[in-house]
Image 1: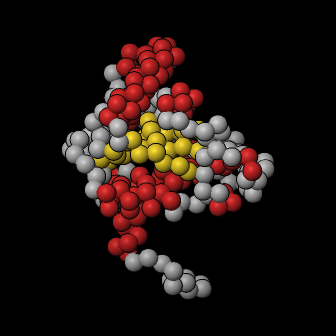
Image 2: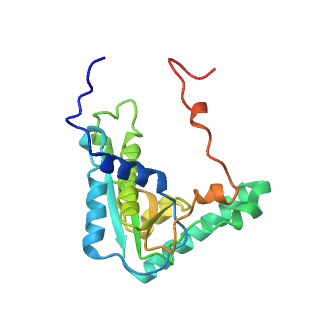
Image 3: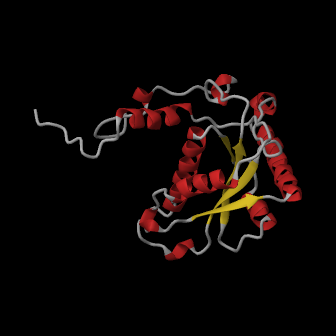
Length: 218
């Protein structure tokens, strides 16, 4: 058998650290208040900015929320949508209302991740798949998430909000669109399993059921 080319391989310890960050990343809802040092936040945002993006369009925009009144206004919008979502869930309404779904008032930092305006001018890689701009932002968020976990900080992705109302609150230009409210900061502990799995809301599917070969699974 041919010898594998090892020139570009990380060390065993580095590889282990990458997989460890992936395996132990959690969508965090419980925070300790505290703070994130400026230099650390800068590192995490730089990691996000190193994400891949279709056509190198870099569609991500991050808004750091430092005004306490604005943070409370964002929380109020999330609470409205939390109630609407619960009602839309029908028989699972009460189960949903028992879940803690965000940590906006408790975390050290709140960031709003958004799609930039003017995205229609970027055609490379988006002519048939315009949603690739959103996929690119998701990659940036995942980079931020993994870097935060590696540095011992928790992060939670909140999507319970009306994007038009949040865009108006933050003064976004026409065409820009918020996609995530990110809660970031120190935590007492990380969940042993994903919180929704831990709370019995859902279970992770076996990978074997999600992978097929040469066509859609029959």
